[in-house]
Length: 320
Ligand code: NAD
Ligand code: UDP
Ligand code: UDP
Image 1 (tube, rainbow, N blue to C red):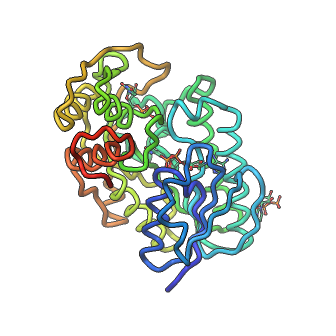
Image 2: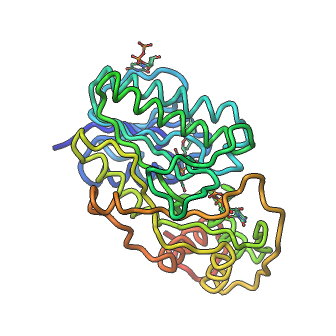
Image 3: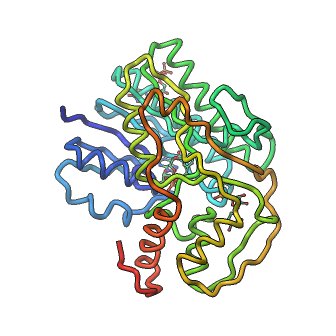
């Protein structure tokens, strides 16, 4: 059945892949984005699609449209970007959630929230299960994002309890792939861009901190499976790849796959940088019948190919 789907943050990294897949499945997509970190380039191939509509709009303001489903992804996700205007980050998370929940309430349609592993902060429990309440600094430089996303989760569950809304909350762990912004500041894009340009690869701290990286196609599959569940499934559900790597291992892998002569240099570790992160995806396996299929090596190769095309670094990879 064809649905009319609202995707906020649809011109961003994950949102643009979600919009494309929804169109491929025959749905109508209304992409809502203020282009803070997203770009027209990400959705350029979709602009001529009959079922695609683009609305430049900031979700901190009310939005009156018609839809059958809402995916709420609008929010800068990289520390560099969400710390650029922290007040706007909180507004986007909190007021954006209120407005999109108000929209879902008026239309009585399901709404999915792109939450984050950052709700676990610098975790004392490893790997992280959904039942863990987290270890988040409420007043640090990361708090605008972490606490904004935590408050958005609270709002989702309050609208569910109070207004019987059909909510879906996924806690997304570090995701990577084509359409990441080259100046996004996140580790995968930084390392690839640095390696392709032959610049120093900047490892923050000793590089012993860990992350678990999920390829974007796997992630979008999980989000769509979540949306397709019945109203009894609210989450929160961890969506991410449970294979854990140190940042130093990631640097070595990027150097190997690009054949780069870049050297690794060590820089100060950012304030409140989580030391370890790995999702427990038992729930996603059971409820969504989902687990990631793309190995880091393969996903990185595809992402390197994409960045090589965007940057024109001409390492002999085919452009995306
Ligand atoms: P992104 O920065 O590429 O995309 C975010 C999009 O939201 C951009 O297109 C941006 O322009 C738009 N946006 C920002 N503020 C807005 C506003 N006020 N009104 C309308 N649009 C606005 O980031 P992404 O990696 O694609 O992340 C998408 C979502 O997934 C975010 O909510 C993020 O918190 C969440 N998430 C991402 C990751 C990850 O590893 N990429 C991990 C956890 C959670
Ligand atoms: N809202 C919106 N689109 C809608 C319906 C509501 O943007 O289609 C906004 C509205 O501006 C409000 C918010 O969502 O501020 C929350 O809506 P809700 O109905 O929960 O609250 P109320 O309008 O009763 O304050
Ligand atoms: N990181 C790094 N070099 C970089 C960018 C990031 O070593 O150029 C580290 C960062 O300190 C963190 C990890 O890589 O420990 C992941 O950072 P990212 O910003 O990608 O995501 P998040 O910290 O939000 O998980």
